[in-house]
Image (tube, rainbow, N blue to C red; front, side, top):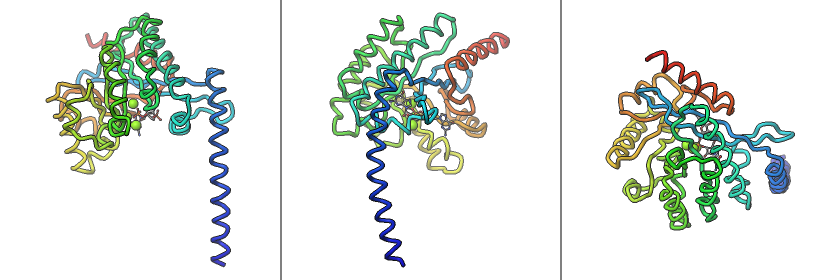
Length: 286
Ligand code: C2E
Ligand code: MG
Ligand code: MG
Ligand code: MG
């Protein structure tokens, strides 16, 4: 009987593997349609200074409005995008849409600090990244002081480290801020951080999540805050979900936080309303 079961499982796996690659090929075709038919949207999540609570940045997060499967999050399609030639294409759309949003907020006199854009490793390696930024900066008349590029810490651990570094230096020279995303998960040597062209670190949410239960995680958070201070770069702590986490972080320093406690990612219209309301709140305090 167990042999029978084993055989079933084998068959199941074979079928599954075949379906997986077929599914992937199908998604790739759909992604091309998605580009053509404008199915990508951005949602936005604010970052605030944990002392003043004023907004310091807005992170743009991509979603795919799939005609049949509904709203898809990046985990469901970015891995496939990364394997195709579409990464720079999608990256360019994201940059364009994010800077269009920034232009709208500036025109509405809403302060948003910087708009943060996630950069995919393939886009970074494509040689097109700085060009795509320049093009959108001119189109929407947005200066580099309004833009942050978030790059995964892990790109510096890849085979193409020097290629990635060159692309980042180009952006850095433009004046665009560069932050290392998901910091603490990629095992980058802390001594290397000092040599990278970066303006800030984003502490990964896995540390924030567990910091109150696990003293080691809290120690890492503390060390990263000190590291950033000594290198004179910024900190954004992501994944802040509870008052207790917020209170603990407040005791550690003066930096920015991002997470469900402040706000969930939201559509452009809701983000605009949120900024308008925050601006009103500040006005009433004065
Ligand atoms: P990330 O850049 O680290 O973005 C933060 C992720 O954490 C987002 O997930 C956000 O919705 C989620 N998040 C925010 N606050 C909290 C919180 O308090 N608790 C928890 N548990 N999660 C929180 P999302 O939007 O699903 O994005 C996942 C990842 O996909 C991003 O991680 C980023 O690496 C990538 N990504 C998103 N948008 C883009 C994009 O436009 N281009 C590229 N290349 N990558 C993107
Ligand atoms: Mg990010
Ligand atoms: Mg992150
Ligand atoms: Mg992440």
